[in-house]
Image (cartoon, rainbow, N blue to C red; front, side, top):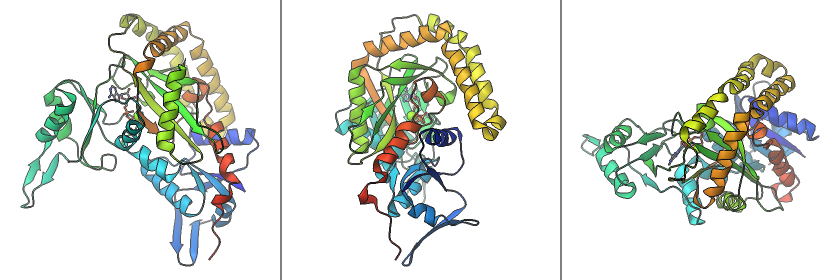
Length: 403
Ligand SMILES: Nc1ncnc2c1ncn2[C@@H]1O[C@H](COP(=O)(O)OP(=O)(O)OP(=O)(O)O)[C@@H](O)[C@H]1O
Ligand SMILES: [Mg+2]
């Protein structure tokens, strides 16, 4: 029985998973999730592209890593492969929770994990009355949000969004009303609004990896990826922020495990990347201007990393060589004095704020090959493959017999 990876295009992370599987001596098959027809009927199923039938491969697979890229495609991927009797990492139940920020937060909250206060209003800003008259609901929605979160800073975000897109900070009511007004229901914002208290998180937030193999307890990795910058209140890496590897206090790791359990539930194997912020409040023990000047010193070594990333030709043609270049560039960035000085500030801040850690999201298909691996030292491909190995011989997931 082998392990398979499901994806539409081989991006850096998927190439990294393949390379890691080779290094671990694991046979990894590829199931495409683009330009294939998946059919189910009373005589069985088919899974084929125009040139190839994948049924035999699927029959020979027990565990599948779902690396399809959008949240919606992942829902389809997990539900189809689970229906075909495969153990999917991550499962449909996990994908379904991770799809929605609010659903995830509700699970954290039920487990007693501290979260940013969050309001969900299941009403769109524009509507139609039964008589066909256009309704504007944004003032009412703003009233409801403000009655819970107060009149100052409020973060508005699409419930199913990613990469920080359309995550906005409303500093006063008129911003709030205007953000609500310009949002329409969409696939990432299916019904209504999610609004959140603005967390005084200083200049960084954290990405923390937790995973569970079958037969073992969930495990939180000891180093987190801190994303840092002053340009925008959104410090996620997609927006080009700097990254640092920081040690996590034990208490924070314990809470992360709780979050993993809250989302992983009864699933035997899973891997999640959690987003966390600290409510630092006034505990800014180093002057912002000093940190900004240190971050400025890192711009040039970080540009070295970006230069390697731009060499898509080499990446596609010779991933192993491109990867060596990437590793060298990150080593250079990490060896800069300013890297260690900012890293230490974040680490101290994390230690001082450890009782005010707030978890706000679980990502089911995290990017990892570049930053999480080379900065936090976690090659997520290894736990992913180990999770798959841990369930691949599991008899509950026997292949579906041909009918
Ligand atoms: N309530 C908040 N208070 C302060 N900052 C916030 C808050 N919510 C989000 N942010 C900032 O905005 C960034 C993006 O928010 P969030 O993670 O919710 O969006 P996303 O679309 O899921 O982004 P990603 O896919 O990168 O995780 C966070 O990394 C954080 O820095
Ligand atoms: Mg996020």
